[in-house]
Amino acid sequence: MPFALDALGRWVAGPDFKVDAERTIAYAEATNDPIPAHRDGTLAPPVFAVVPIWDTLTAAMAQVTPPEALAFVVHGEQDMHFHRPIRPGMLLRSEAAPVGVHVKPNGTTVVVKVRTVDETGDPVVEQYMTSFFRGIADGESAGEEAPPHKLTAEVRAGEPVATVAQAIDADQTFRYAKASGDNMPIHLDEEFARNVGLPGIIVHGLCTMAFTSWAVVTSVADGDSTRLARLAVRFARPVLPGQTITTTIWAAGERDGRAGYGFETRNPDGDVVVKDGLAEVRPSPR
Image (cartoon, rainbow, N blue to C red):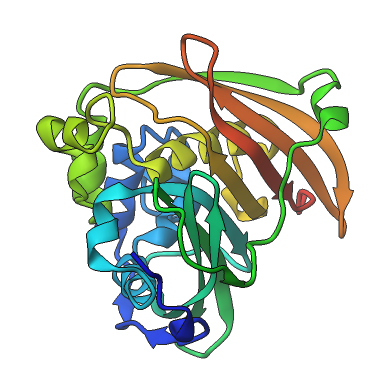
């Protein structure tokens, strides 16, 4: 299954996306987000930034990915850099390009970069999505890696600043699919998920990331998501509907005037499901 390395760096422009409060509220509800400004439509939750770009992102990834490989894809990493919050009423424009293909011993990763601006051209969010194609380990590597966000042993050895337990509902994947537009069958079809080697329906990686986002914001940003400058995660193991996940957060020093925090998330068996979590938080405006 060769990946098309000649398509690296080829940008795809997406359609304009008008943000409306009903859509942002639905996303908050689908991710059990408790932050009032997200629940009342004042602000979009941070990870809502994937909703306007989803079709553009997948079109960019398709430029390098053989169609027969798509049944073996899982979300590997997501890294979001927030220049300004998304608010209802904004008109967003996005473009995406595959920027890297990297063959590993047990599969291949594809890195896609996405840029989102407002109608004046001012930057809103920049994202990197890394997809992992399980078991496809032939061909060549080329292009760039996503920016690093490793949780170091030194940071992890410190005393945690917060630990947050969150319950994933039994119907979480169905609610998230409707709110996000991500209808991949591994999240909705039990038989399909088992046929591709999964234990059953798994929770969308971005849904799990949204849970970690509000765990971070409520714990270290006073519930103010406008202070979140960056959020990056690596998905280490599938989360299953009905599980309770626990996110542990550590202080990780200062980065360009922002407070850095490392985090990881575990399932009820103690297995890490989100690793190498990184959040950068702007100072309080007050």
